[in-house]
Length: 332
Image (cartoon, rainbow, N blue to C red; front, top):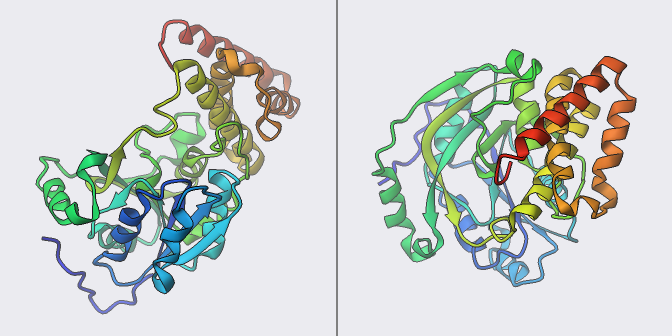
């Protein structure tokens, strides 16, 4: 059983949880309830409905003033995150996909890590992968107890990866969206995100958020499972390899391009992401599919035009290298 949060007399930071939802009405109640049942007392739950065509709006309406509802036309993941952040007031910002959920003690642990050092600007956690049939409102308590009993060796590490990332090294410790928390201080540098939708609706994803955050600031990573990642047949799982490459290529190319535009001090990592993304994009038979706001060919040409001849040569060589590697891989 989780313990109630006990404060030590210090003022408590407000935590804003931004739930992003698109056509997940069947999962949304569990995600919302997992936020409302937190042991930490100062939480605002913002639910962004990104133009869903199912019953999501009715689910959100049923919670009344217990949440902050945002209903908007479909604009993709970045657009939904921008709307959620604009509506937030929290000192700490946590992200949650509508098909995932938090353990009741998650935010209490996250807050303690933020409060442990004044220079901490991000906290990354982990989530237990659970089949969707084992998740339901009536099963939450037993599910949480099962996850707490899992034999996971918790490691908490304070990480300063700024120098390595600026040298072009991709961090291997950055988890998925629902495990990401940021201070408002760093979030105000990251938001608003480029509202690029692309063919999949996810041309700008958590890759764009967590990469600059790690390159600009210090944070904590804990291996403790403080959430649940739901296994189900989502959009990505139903794509064939060729379409996955198209989607991956679009995400990485767009991310690399926009990191260069907004964070020029991170040019080496932006170059690597763009080259890897463009190589993957060109390896897909769907590379000819045109999307106005995520035109990979145009982004590459603009990036090259902003670079000197030596950088252009490096980029071409990196693209050739990644394309060669893709010949021997089933995906990326």
